[in-house]
Image (cartoon, rainbow, N blue to C red; front, side):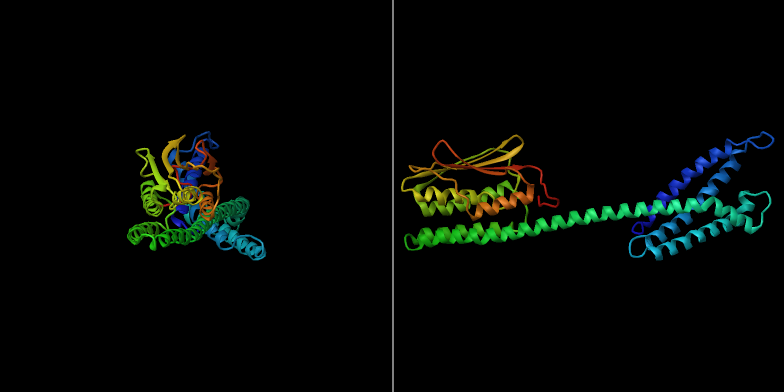
Length: 357
């Protein structure tokens, strides 16, 4: 209530204006001793004056409740302060009635001040305490909404922190594996190792640019995957064959950064690299039931393929859970070729507020 005084004043003024309309209607429905109905101008004067007098008094009462809320640990002090303000408002309303009576006409002849004070006490004491109760309800509701917003902000900050921590785990892991692949080529083919280093530079620059992002466009993630697979093709030569199939119109679909590379790495490390004959890695990107579907499958070769779950996949699963909640976002199944198919399903809508476009 104290945070937005002008909006509170507007609401209070609107409320008491409606009360003035009701009071005016009540005055118009009353008949005098002679059976005459009160003129509209006089009825409106009495109705709106009585109502609008409450606007500054209500604002003062709201300030008092905001300053001295009745709550555990300070109830006695708050009750004394609120009771004092309530009595002050009773007196102020009585004084206002006496001061404005010549123009408004509540009384045909001004009564003694003591009589007006007693009338104000009788008419307004209960109303003021009811207003104190309503003000506390509004105050507690505002505090509850504020706590909810703070909780949401803290949860979002916690998700950000966890995602950053998971990304910081993934990047060193990813860099180590890429550098390890290059190290294997240094003594076998220096030119190939040089090409791999150039590709690695492009790859790392791309991954670091998106390190703090929750999501990146699919086009960027596919570009990073192509760079990674280019490095692996230099290392494995003909043993790694690629089969791409990417449906059009999906370039802007938001995906977590470094989401596809661990899937390809898992297939290469646990299937393709163990073979002496050519193996095929199939990359399929499409939609299914309003979800983005990415499938990365190996053909297993001449040996039974086993589903593996390494560090990169565990990290990816945790990141997906933080971004989209619990769900079957990532799955691994054996396929008809004797290999493993990793399926990544992602919603188009971002589940975490504030996610990067």
